[in-house]
Amino acid sequence: MISSLRERADALRPVTMERNCAIYAEGSCLISCGLTKVLCTASVEEKTPPFLRGTGKGWVTAEYSLLPRSTATRVPRDSVKGKINGRSQEIQRLIGRSLRAAVDLDMLGERQITLDCDVLQADGGTRTASITGAYVALVDALRWLRGQGVFDALPIKSQIAAVSAGKVDGSLILDLCYEEDSSAEVDFNVVMNNKGEFVEVQGTGEGGVFSRDEMNGMLDLAASGIAGLMELQRKTLLWDDGEVAVRC
Image (cartoon, rainbow, N blue to C red; front, side):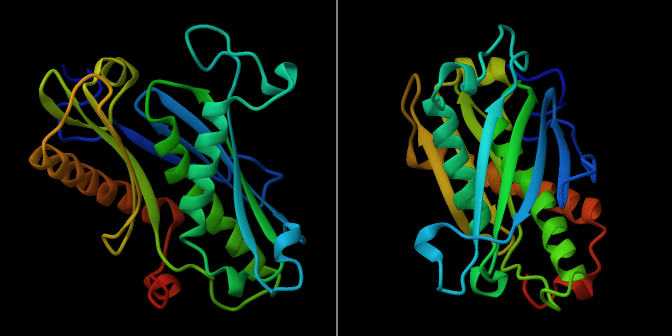
């Protein structure tokens, strides 16, 4: 089974990234991966969590939510339910961990950047799309701080992107859509930096098991897909080699 939005099982679904799509945020990106669409915004605040006060270190955190009609049936807002959905909580922690790996928190100073990832339309891969799009928003927020004279060089340690891979009907597939994900025997979510290092790997035998060779195959698929996503991030950010060569 291969999504009609791509030609091959080892190919990404069509991906687009649009910067500066939210006029009030210090950084923003609207990312589309196939039919999945996520609006990512980065907000800068001159404060840190209590456990970091007085340390000179900054913080990067995230919030994630599915908008009510981002799925086939309406999803009630967390504010109405009075508590954060467990899945949303797990995903926003993943986004925060992933993006903190990109930033020199000492160089950021005692300020916080919050990445809000709001899913406008969900068709699989919302967490990985959120991470990939939030990175673009994060970089633009750091550029905004540089423009305010906070630092001369961007406090970026590495580029970060994420993608899913899985086993569906015995075949390994990259960047699963909802139909593929819901019927997958195995599902992996992979976060990597531009040095080829893993930030996080979430792998589960949802409806079957997987061999070491299959695991390596899914990780290889993810690495290939992430390389393509990073290339698009750089093009979207209009990165000049001199801007990132020192830190990335």
